[in-house]
Length: 173
Image (tube, rainbow, N blue to C red; front, side):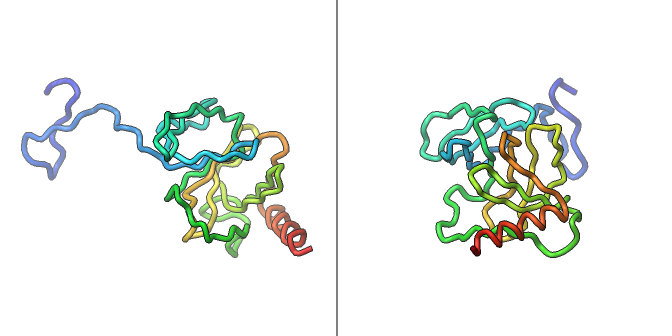
């Protein structure tokens, strides 16, 4: 056997070999929402929550941009960079318990007043951010990485449900 190859897995053609090299990173479609209100749509191949920065290649084909996590409000991993111009974002939870297989219910209120509701398996106040998912099956978001910057309020479980009710009352007023 030569270095960098493995034996033929069952079901492959005799003599077939496979490289042991690391797979190429996938391009993730992202929409970066910055604390200053700006938005950058593009792809990234190097986002790691524990790293202080990532690179986003804009969808217009311009040069990639180095983005510091401290500049971000949230990083949305999306199905389609075009999104749906007719969508109406209404924060909501699916019915059910405060915790389920998707994690705990979380409501995130940003300093600009935006509220995002969903579920998280990874919310931890000792980390700089966490992943969450909304429960909108026809929505464009696959997952969201929320940065715990100053002014961000996260409520969990029944408190998250109450945050949503309070937001709904404020919106109706």
